[in-house]
Image 1 (tube, rainbow, N blue to C red):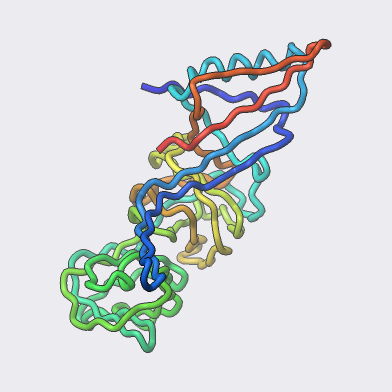
Image 2: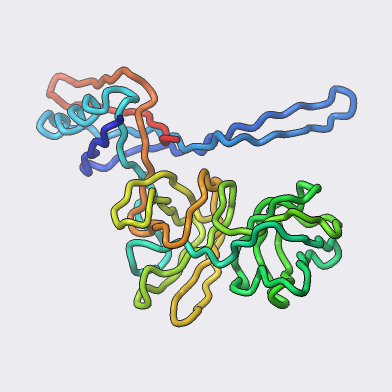
Amino acid sequence: MAKIVTMPTTPNFIRSNFTLRRTIGSVASPYTGKVRTQEYDGVYWEATVTLPPMRRDVAKNWQSFLLELNGPVNHFKFADPDALTNQGTYNANDLKAKDRINQGSIELDFIYASQTIVAPSNTTPFANAVEGDFIVVTGSINPENNGTHKITTKTNAYTVVVESESGGLVQEADKTGCTIKSNQKGATGINLSASSNSATGTIKQGDYLQITSSSTAGANPVQYVMVTDDATLNVIGGEDTYGVKIQPKLRTAITQNHLVRFASPKGMFRLTTKDIDWDADNISNYGMSFSCIEVV
């Protein structure tokens, strides 16, 4: 089992490159020029960082850290070095996953003209939903109707107008066996609430979030995501709730009260190579850099 090694906090990096790697296959027709793409689950962050020149008494901390990692065997918590502090004003450490929509097998109509999803009038799949919530639909014949949708208007407990990740719904009627849920694997939007009634504030585009492993405070990170639009804020029963658009998509579903860290969020990373090196000049100024990749 991998050990988690604590990374030194000083000095800060003087240069960094932070990259999101995606696994996407594509095939282009040599006759029409049309391109078909297939997105796979392999999405992860990668970074290369450089430390400033250091005297030996400081460099030894980084040397020990890198050696303890044992190449790519052990792990460490790491964040985008240029975005260690979020710009949103949310004033608590954590948010909680909110599972307001959890509908099993149901018949749905998808209406192209109004971008509306309609369930039978004797059902209430959207009873607890609020405008700004994200839902994940499965079971449609048309891929455009599946996936993540943001509720822009809640007409009633069985009808919502949506903004679709796919770019728009396509017409489809009386499709049985669909599901409507939130915070599912593959979602590009998640529904969260404040961790207490006193917690409040904004979540802004460009902020990072740490998806943790459980509902326990201090739980280790399992995914590092960026907020790609200002979160929609609603107040329900005195509690702030947020619809948050993210990238990359969720690797695993998060359940009710699962913690998502806002304050100083981090991901879990490992080194990309088994070899460690550094250089030094004639006055013992040490230079050091390394590359790492998010643990999947």
